[in-house]
Length: 301
Image 1 (spheres, one colour):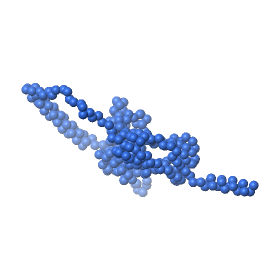
Image 2 (tube, helix red, strand yellow):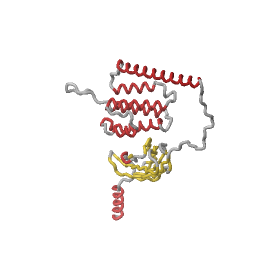
Image 3 (cartoon, rainbow, N blue to C red):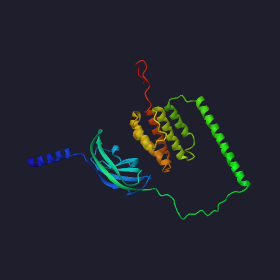
Image 4 (tube, one colour):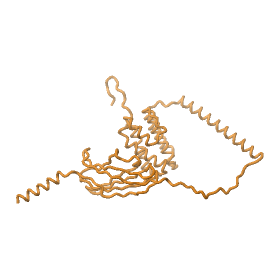
């Protein structure tokens, strides 16, 4: 009897001190994808119950952008992670991901997975058999001179309008320069964009171009970092060197990725997605406003 009790006690103790574990039980992913076209990857995980499953952001592959990541628990010890990836390389590549098992901010275990992917170039329409069958038409005589005259007149009038617009813009800038803080200017431009009617006219690409330009202008005015010609990846890399933007890198990446899908992949966003992106931009702007300076040894609250 004593031996039986001792055996039960030993087994219980061993179970208690067993290391926490996480493992990939199943993976669903394509092996052939197209450059700059999003595709889905799903992982089914099993782990020790009572712990949280997160991602190691630093271990993600540079050839892919994670545009969406959703974890769905299916039981206390299992769950699925669904990803939407955007490939930005050609040929054979590998998507590497590391899942972390954490509790109270501490990592108890981790598991890494590598996914080999062959990235093909985007297909373009090119058929060497196509030929122009319309005969060339060259105007002759007075008709040709008239066309040249109208063309020169149009160019001259367009040049006149351009110079007039430049002069008017310069005058407006000198006489009506906005003296408000750059965060207030950016937030008011977001409100003006919402009321512009672009979204209602389904001009989604122009809407997101304008929304991203508001962010670029704010970064320049607030941190003196010229990101006007940066790609999303370059902007994120530059943001890592700006201390005020460090806590907002994840939100900034999600915002830029969402805009890239609309601007380059021609994705039609839902209104909920638009509202999420606008709120993310507002939070980034409000969260990076520097505190007011101290006056007479007293802090402003």
